[in-house]
Length: 366
Ligand SMILES: [Zn+2]
Ligand SMILES: [Zn+2]
Image (cartoon, rainbow, N blue to C red; front, side, top):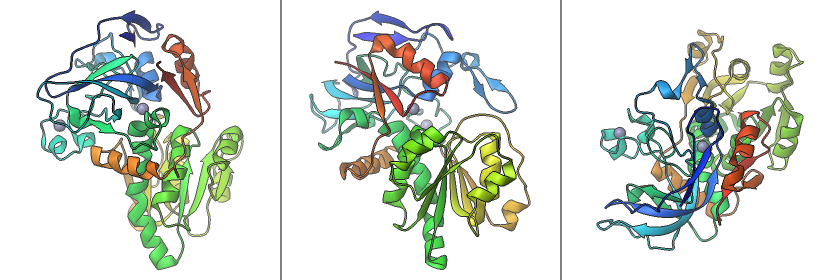
């Protein structure tokens, strides 16, 4: 099998050939067809994440060892099954992988809530577990491998366990609040911040999950990204250009009463501050983006306006199955895709690093 590894931060990934692994007793091996190039992979490669009060280095974590095969957005064909593997999956099935493994032992993991596990950093393609920048992958437990509905294509599917699942979880978190607004006010509105890959997924998810007449507004700093977003059918787009004053942007964005939910897929100082200003009474501010930094927000406003701030990190296996059901209808569209060979992965990673990737880049294996 072929694989690409991060050997040293910021050095080009190294491609090598090794034998295809055998499956663990309860696990499976998948022949990968598509593997998404995610911003988190690039953070691993550059070995830094801005936490606002400090810069985190992956290599400072004792559980994190280089070299590592990155990649956690994986779809493919079931290649082999472990000896004692209890699953309805069959060799040749088209599958997608839930990569957020957790410790596999704690209460949260047993309840299918690995985003709350203390070892939530145990992810395929992070730290110690080999990921999807490879022609094959061994997944230690078959419960993390899910068969695809016939109508869901493999290239589209590889992004579902990361961006699809995360945006679904974000929308689901806002659902009660938005439905309540619709019940009491007869109308509801959400603001999606960031028209990158996640924002595009979110428009489709919101249209399927939230009340049908919910007003969906999308904001971004780039007009070109808003032009792409318009094709996904939001009610309105608004440009948060850096030349405008913050107050002007708030005024342009806010409608009377403010938004019932703001879903921030950037989550930077400026987006968080504007989001807070645009959030209505009883509203929920869902933070998803990992841009970095800190923000100045008015603290008394939050209790005085009975608002919530909710962080969202990925989702559960159950939610991934719900996402697949939703996608089976064909009503959720993927962001524009660009395909790369494993040998050209640095091209994709560099574009993502510089914020120049339109839609999503995915590695295609033959
Ligand atoms: Zn991802
Ligand atoms: Zn756990």
